[in-house]
Image (cartoon, rainbow, N blue to C red; front, side, top):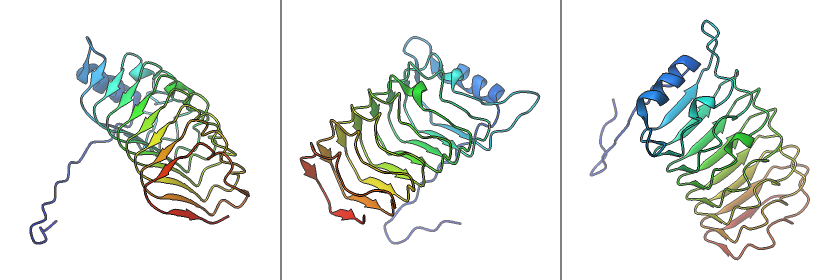
Length: 219
């Protein structure tokens, strides 16, 4: 059991992962405010499988959702091939984590997304090679992490103006350039750019005016 240390308090909330399309559709139907399109709960899609043909292949269950007041976490969902269907989603108040989805090929379904209040993480999505569709994303409240991915550049993130936390670009074997961050002026904490064996320079960060922490670079 977790024990307090001194005056430190520990709070942990378990969120039941959604594994099938039927459960995903039911969750959205029960929790969406039909007048505003807002869901006031976090959504976790994980260990997705096929049960009587009920496969999560995209995000069409979110077709009427404009805001998630919580996290959107998609981890280890091998049936997922795209994020199609979330084209009305403009705001995620906490984090957006997309990790270890071996058949995800694009993120163009997030074409209306403007704001992520927490961190935005893209990691180990082996068939995902483009940020196309994220052009309206302007502000990330915490960190942007791009790790162990197949992107060759950051093209598609041209609308991003501010990262409140860290910029982490690490262990991307095909990353050749940072070009694509055409509007980025601020990184609130450290910029960590390491272990990208094809990356030769930092071109692409030409408009950057502020880094709140250190610049940790290994080319």
